Length: 487
Image (tube, rainbow, N blue to C red; front, side):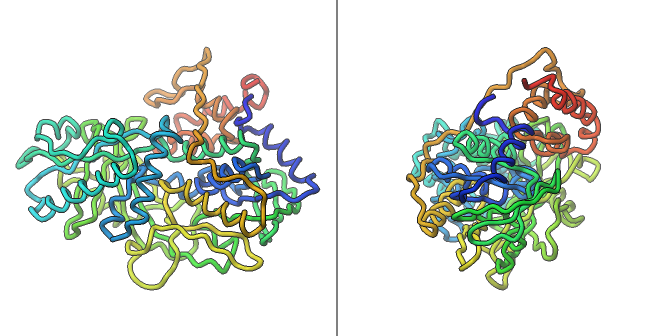
């Protein structure tokens, strides 16, 4: 096994070592989303002793419910937030060139020039794409990685999105952005890289009585609890940050998506981008994805009340997404086309009135006497910078002896899965092999069937697919536990 391998045996060993530890950790990170995993990686890469604890599984929360886009910050220019726009473009550049080029690839946005798109809107899109290209160039990303914006013919537009309606189609405006193969895979890769740097990564471990210098940890699989001391504690629990520190006030915003068969849009290779009627700077996207799917999003709705484990789109959001994208399609979509759906909650700081769409997407590092350091806000693209700022705060607050941040030049693990004699697909029509399932249990920290179906793969986004694949995944898990694979 490599140092980055996460599995049940590694978890048992590291949990026992943490319970028996007689000296404080340098940093205890609470939360196994992309920011928490990033903080664990950043701290470990500086030479600090680190443990990450997550009550459920890696990428259990908001990190797996994104649009899978690595944004260049264009929307922040439109709102005048130049600093976060530049930060987003720079972090996209690092992800696509150094950190995770195996997980991020270019995606072409396609804005069809249909009669419904006014002259003013066309001009706004052109200006926006041009400004986005300025961000690309200023961050150093070459056109060989992200192509320049351009206008294409109707035939070329139909080549990218075959399902477009042709009546009045005068071509399209295009620009490129980054797209993750899978957002949950990014989290797992960051966590495994942290493990390779010496961090303990422990799922199914709940943190309670969290303070500035420690917490009580409970192994939720056995019920055993024990205290852990740390010179610094980082609360990276996202929308659940207020449960760890009740003084934190968040105002969650829900972003919802629908899962469609790619065939419903003619198997597109570009991201159909349709303006929301009445809004110059708001769009709905149909994003081609793995497993022959398209994700249709995105909404921005107030989500008050108790934070659910798995948020769900509202009925009005489903109708809004279908109606908006259908305005550009030859065959309008209906609810019969929806194969699955998901929603995520953005952990936005509560700064008063106004719509959640107007709240800043910048992140904040919050420090209060006797409390853990909390990092909230931000977005998936800028996770590395969020983690750096949180660890910088921990180093400063606790006076830790640490090296400089190294994550700008640190590539994430990119293991090749070795095909075995049983690398056939786990179910008809599902492009996931048995070897991938084995690898999830032996190297990626999956502890049960749901970890594989919902977070190491995205099979679970379509309930029918999850039912068909479950039996094979359970069989592989039994073999792993019996020691037949992964030795």
